[in-house]
Length: 245
Length: 245
DNA sequence: CAGAGTAGCGTACGCCGTTCGCCTCATGCG
DNA sequence: CGCATGAGGCGAACGGCGTACGCTACTCTG
Image 1: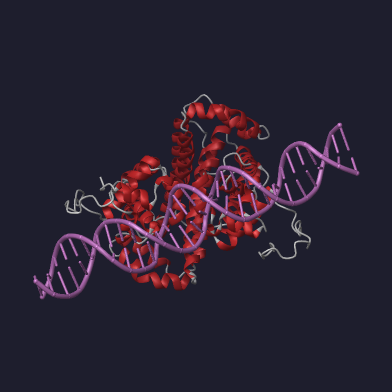
Image 2: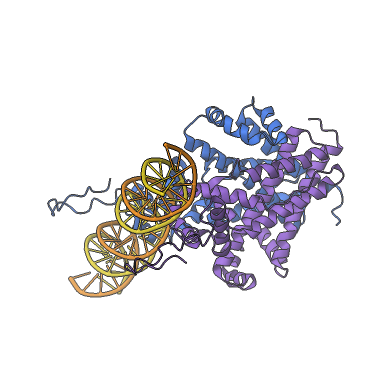
């Protein structure tokens, strides 16, 4: 609760009810930013609103963070730390990679605003969490039997897929959320538009109508695992056949 | 050349040197926006600057476009039209898919700002170009022998990978471009920072130092095709083995 | 030639990120 | 014990943003 503005109210009343909170710090700023993004979405994150939430002025944040872009970089790296990558184990590398993929996916879906924020900073290239997770994931592929170079390419493949798939999912869910409606109702209300748009594209249309009766979230989850499986299959051929060429 | 502002200069001078350009239109707006983005980057696109380029006021644009988000949707769909997807041909589906993937990649690299803009609109879900290309790509997978549902999943897999990989590439290149330096020099100037960041991560470090002497663009291209190949391999196992399960 | 409709524009509003100079206060040193 | 120092915090202000609104001026219809 920041002091309400009154025109000089009894000047002698102790002028320092500060330190209610542990004051500002980079960590507090970053985690409050994440909470703000989670609850109110991308547009709601402004230096002013964030400052207000912390019981501080907007400009105070600049003592701990160079600018908004840097703040976002920190935020991205922070949530990247939520991903769980299992320890390397040659016997079950497929399971371990699958687990990582799912963990990354649910992280993105937990924080759907990353989709809109990732383009501004790329991945936070040198953030400690990102590096730690990359190292662990690289270890997974090395344990599976890939040489360093190829393990690196395999990891890039997997991450690109998961990020590509889930950010698109997250963007879709963000639009849905902004509509304020149930997914079922929302799709229903768009039905005429989509049907008209689809009418010249029989293949697309068939695909949609086939899906029509099923739970959309389940379809998304299945599509996701389908992709992961195919990638793992594709990688596996490189391990079983001798990796020449 | 919009008329310069002078305080009432001979009011009788013909007050309508308009129509130098074919006036405003949605198409002209969209294509000028793309050109602006290509030459000056994401931040340079404002309704005012775009209007100025078209010899018009900022608010005039709103006669043709509901708001900036809609403009961006149109822009994204427009550049999506640049992608080339070959006609379906069962005999060479791998080649056709590979071609599409490369075409999509070079489109993104030609317009690196899509990375920062995609998060705001998702993919322009119902844009005509996006639908047309999706239909064509779906046909590719159907021709390869996939059922509609699976063809849809296969397409999502490929697109998610290509988009994920190339937008990250594009974001990297944007940062590089903003630095104003040669890639070689830029990396060199960041060397101390990256080396310190990498020191606790031996696997990552080994990967980087191995790459150090090679042309970065070539590495990126190779990583990209590696991923495409693995995805195609993974998909192929579903065609050769009977697609049970 | 009257009327209606539309493209274009100037102004203004509220919000944004960020800079600057000031104030306050805890700290360490003589 | 007293004081200088430096850092954290803040209010005001700047320039720029997207966009709502109401006016003008043109073109086209009947």
